[in-house]
Image (cartoon, rainbow, N blue to C red; front, side):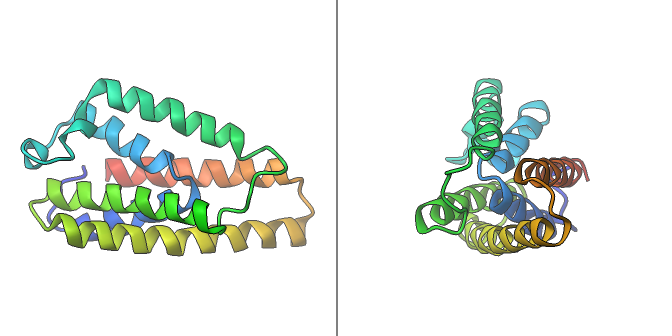
Length: 160
């Protein structure tokens, strides 16, 4: 559950890292969970829209599109400034949402989520490069492994 006074800081770090791996997947997973189990802490927040079924569905479509787009050979690296900025913004949104749902500072959550997304971006970028270098797996297969890791982690975090 996303609102857990004992774990929400770690959940923010985890979901921020997921945003670093796939920018749209973190808010999609978060919104899906919030659409099923709304938070009273978000009721009067500017982030309350993430609890909408319509928003959750739209974010899932965007996340699926991103997963497919990642398999295109000439897509810029995730560590390029525009891509990194989008991932940091995604991490900031999930962090702000988790902190707000737990009645903590939206700003602190946004900063922590963005920092975790940036760290997750670089870690996943270099991990994928290492996997490719040492295993000689096709990029599409290493991308699919990364997708499975991202999705499994994100799902586990939202359910924990």
